[in-house]
Image (cartoon, rainbow, N blue to C red):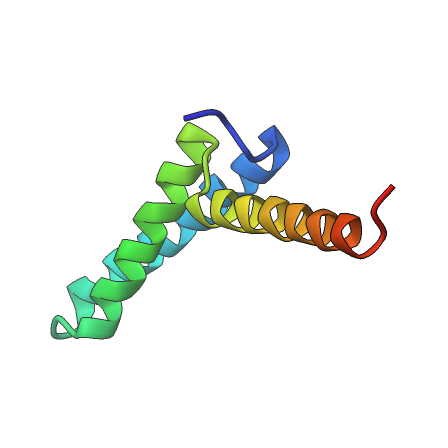
Length: 83
């Protein structure tokens, strides 16, 4: 697992994740435990984890898809215009 996000991106994710996690924690102490708050807590924890590891699974999937599309376009171009 190689880092696929920059340090600045990781710091933004950490800031957003900790801020959202603090807000969710405050909301959960004031109100009843709604499912939406638990989902926000999971998303916040994911952002903190992505910031710490500097690895984003969605970025990995999109980069892999982009490479697959680029390869498919090259293969079709070679098939249409053989050298």
